[in-house]
Amino acid sequence: MDHLQVARELIAIESITGNEEGVTRCLEGRLRELGLDVRSETVAPGRRNLIAGPERPTVLFCTHTDTVPPFVPFREDAEWLWGRGACDTKGITACFLAAAARLLERGIDDFGLLFVVGEETDNAGARVANRSVRAEYVVVGEPTENRLAIGHKGVVGATIRVRGRACHSAYPHAGDSAIHRLLGYLPRLLATDFGTSEVLGPGTVNVGKISGGVAHNVLAPSAEASVTIRVVIDIGEVESRLCACFADPVSGEPDPQVDVDVWLRIRSPQLERLEGFEETVVSYGTDIPCLLDVGKPLLYGPGSILDAHTANERISKRSMAIAIDDYVEIAERLIARRAGS
Figure 1 (tube, helix red, strand yellow):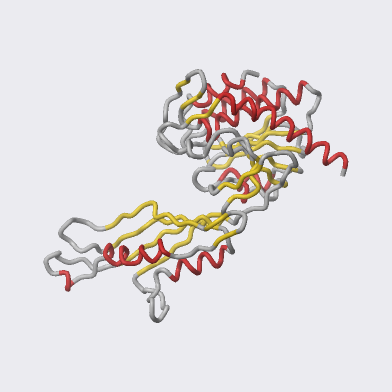
Figure 2: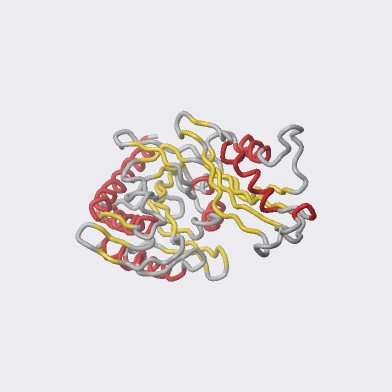
């Protein structure tokens, strides 16, 4: 199977989260070309996961079909494939299919493939697959620069909502600006220590979005901020430190004008290792914490996360060729490990 042609086809299809079906159909056809048993499971109307191969394989290759916005058209030069999803993760998907073809040529069929929707937002596809799909090992594809990741950070996602009281801006004593109150708290949030791990490094915080107010000459009656914390310690402790950022600094009592809504909690997972592979640690999140009942997780892929989610997303053809060799070796070694256990 020509992995570069598969990657070209996939990158050319817009599959921003919620609109994965075009890629799903393309993959369905490619998997059937390999002679694999292909089945799907519905995640939401018009959105489905794809599963190929035996029911309970030793090795399951898994990645996601969705991308972040906006769509970036495909282009190519001698060294790189460019476009949305090139490294996150359509180039990786093409490598999975090429590795599968090579394994089948060698008479090895104790593996499967799983393609899920929604990784870039709420891990919806992985959560559904975690209830129904089983393997001994699940090899998750994300850009790790052709190194085996031995850990990645967890995530806490929260929305901070602040209530105020509107009034004419010429008479600020008559109101209470929710925006001013929020801005007063954010320096405390950004200065907070969210812990450090010997393996994963420090926890980090990002205020990704701020909104609120009604007009330039009105004190804001409401405001909110979207916050993401990359977690390296106990997730309950992280939440406690987060809430403390919006409490009275003297009494420690919560501000009654502020609600801290934690809507995402993903712990840092334990990952499998394989001797002989160069190792790394990544800070971004993956579907792995939502796939822990599927199998023992490994994390490996070509491409750099620093290229993902950018206007110049790309993957090198050389890194893809290396990844195909490595995926085949990973599968063969894990199958041999299980047979010898």
